[in-house]
Picture (cartoon, helix red, strand yellow):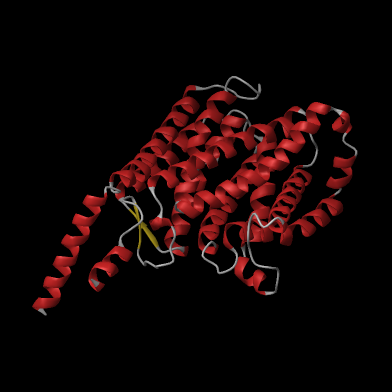
Length: 356
């Protein structure tokens, strides 16, 4: 029985990804395929919606400060979670000095991800934004190997390579090359990958949990970000913005603040039920809709066949990854099959011990 329990704990959470070390407290292996897929779908929808709303606020209305937009999203996160905690709807530990140790370096990654993401959204067309974001997947895979000690099957590695190759093909035809925009988007790739990996790692911290990670991220970083906006003059530009009296702009600004909270929650939720790499790939898959919609709306896309072909290769690789991550995981959830595998492994181990 002890051998069987040990083998059950050691079973990997998915067929595509395995940890080289396994802990009883690791959450991802304990969740069903339905929870994995539904949390991934929630993240994909949230990411798509906030990208569109951010693009409207920053590009269509020409809102001058992406830093102030990030501040609005942080404040919204703090208000919602504080109200929920006072209402006892959610629970996380009270603030003390241990919070800094438990959550570091997430606040730095959080603000870096926010600011570089909004800056690149403003400066790039939607299709090229989504193409260059694919490098996040490769960076996440590398960071998971070194930070979380994960290994990946050949099928997942090949699908990630296909996504990156498609990215290079699509980006090679960008006729609107902007070195500043490309710098922002590559920094955003790094911050997103690091944020996803360390979010996965910090979710196991005692007392924090999903809501504590979100809340203290925003609390710790919001004041330094406000000071930065004052020193750079961004706050004055935002206050002097002429469209505050425009109801359409006001609604879009409030929507992007709310969606900032929803997006961060969906990332934490998806990371809780899946791996950091899966969270990153899901973000890439949702870009199918963003990229192809951006070809017909927005007016800032320059069509070329290499770009279109590269986008299609990227999406094909993402779909293959999804197949091996979600569909194969669902197949292994047959209780009789799991029990048969467990029994076979137990008997094999027992016979080896007996031989010794």
